[in-house]
Image (cartoon, rainbow over all chains, first blue to last red; front, side, top):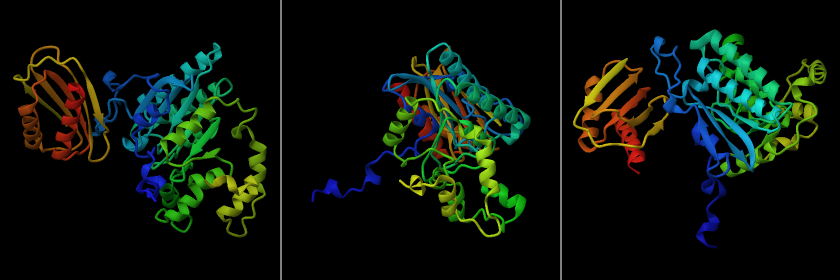
Length: 290
Length: 97
């Protein structure tokens, strides 16, 4: 056996999680067919962070790249998880909303432009309070305006995950793509523990957290659409597929009755385990496996 | 905290610009752009008070080898002197390549 044969695949593949937000967004586009809008040289920083003794970032942690994916127009909006936990503030929120609205404008004019949201975020930036909350509302309404005209694809790769207000933006998107390392939830584990105690949810129990918020479980429950490996080539291929996909006739966020009935039907007299919830909600637990 | 330095001896004309790094814990980002006039100017925004002598020492060392007339802007989230020098050299590499 030659030596190359014994090198496992996880060594030779290019990790997506290890890329920063900017490189993640760049990696999705056709070679040389993209450009960044409002880049760091435009110096659109948060005006609020320095007032609180916090160093801002020149792109406010939001990277917007326009280009083509498999020949079709697309815009990728990446939140940088390493900067302030990927939190959404006034400037990053405005960049996101403006990019989505321009994609809607082009799509309505007949040039279907898909949007890809690369979300690594804890939600609203607490230092910008109401402005961050307003940004979340604007992003959600912009996603809702775009999705009847072009796919809105959320990618949660990890390791920050997608929580708080931005999990709602993920919830209303056309498609959600996750890795096993990624997490998706409205309240993060530490918030739940803080509000309801460690008996309710132990934020130090990683197995528990991933069994509930993890990509495998979210896809298994049918709350996300695709589980991919942490591999730049595979994620790129998956995004390519969704950018070219037909628009959905109905979205999860419209299936209010279905989800109300499912929650009402849960037997809370005993502890519900993640695997039985996958069977009950999705009737196809295999979807949550790679 | 805001720190400013001038390096008037750095006069080589520069045409490229560079951006490297992320304002994550223990890291920083650098913007390097051609200066309008002669000489280089460095402007640092940092969340860590003090260490002005360390900043000066690292920048002095960087400009002992680099002579480009650039405006440098740094957003720092507690990068160590070693990381600061590496980020600066990384930006210089982008500009010179």
